[in-house]
Length: 175
Image (cartoon, rainbow, N blue to C red; front, side):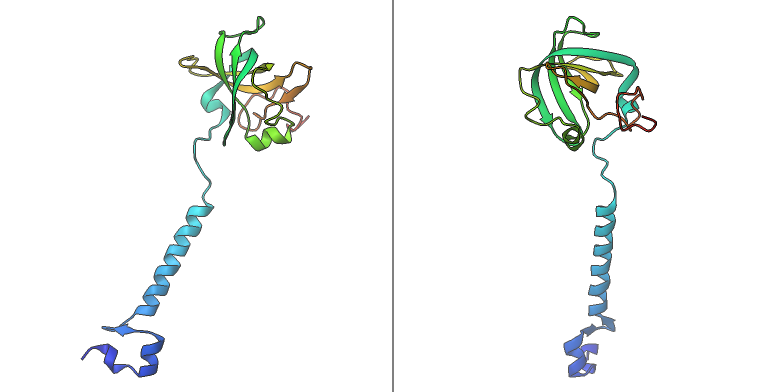
């Protein structure tokens, strides 16, 4: 006769005991373990494609780029502004460039939004070129400042990640 038949009817309704094992306790322990794993997984910081400035860009390779905006990507963890660099005062290669900015939220707080970056508008960007210096298929830079045709100049949100402190960002300590 199994252990199930040896417990009272009331005990059998409250929890089931099979071969000396309390099934309710096992279920509760399993639920607690799954919950604990879920909490740990949720509380871990995301490590998806985010990097420090110095991992990808070179503080010793400043760039000035200018030309029309050809595309804007509002994606986390960074925005990307694509321009066709045709500025006669440009310090780097003419042609297509991808310029990395801060997070979409950072740019919004600094006054840059979807309506302020219109396709075809000429802008000037200062920043730093990628360490690899490769321009295939597109040259890449980290944007520091963006200047609009009306003269407005806005910080693109690259500080605090190892980018050089050049006084451009008013939120840098000591400013």
